[in-house]
Length: 333
Image (cartoon, rainbow, N blue to C red):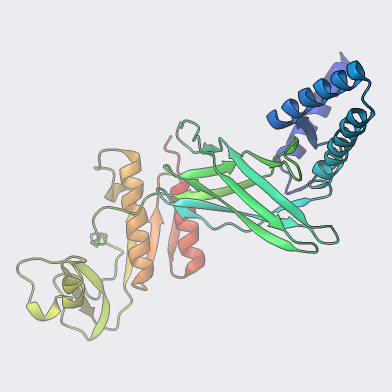
């Protein structure tokens, strides 16, 4: 039993290292080559020519047949060499919001190598990982590249997102039929490339100001008493016209009212209790995501309280990314 358990542990470690791989190098061990349809037809033609030459004892027929066959054999080496030694690395990819396209950045390293022609990069069924059950996203796209010698280029693989969570580029296939289209060589590339998808920001644009620990220097009842601009809120019929953001109205962005307050700090808590009345979890997370972006844009100190996580009031890019990440990976238990 001991050897079996050790063998199982070895294969688990091998699979883990494969999934965590950040760099792939195309070698003779992971490049495969087969004839194309044109290559198969070409082989049949050569066979017919060989039989005809033997039947009529035609030396010129033999010469032409073997000349074409040798060209086909040489093309195998060129097709294989067009992929050999290519290095692919995972680049930096930015998070996106659900509904946007995730852009996977891959670095193709061809330094100290000959020029590569007509490399086709094809994406096969990336899997979208999420805290909630999801189906696979079938998305096939092909990009063709010519890479000059001694070059380090960037390849962008777009994936349409529909749900929050992780979207993972499971497998990439690079194919070439250069130079004669008689043979095609390919290699399967699996890299640990994933992008975080935030919830779709949508819902009410008015920040919640109903908590006892909120210091709202300029709430709806106090607006206009100070001179410091603190943000926007939805327009109400009782609002004075001079506080309406007429530029937004002219651009058909909606009716918003400018809020002004004193010199006190403006702090707001975004809590799960504020959105638990919404129809479902995804709608609630979308609302919290929108409030987070609004508070960040208006330079308001904000905190986030979820069922299992709490982020103290703060400002800045790092605080915003922490809150959005928590919303993207939220799992209500």
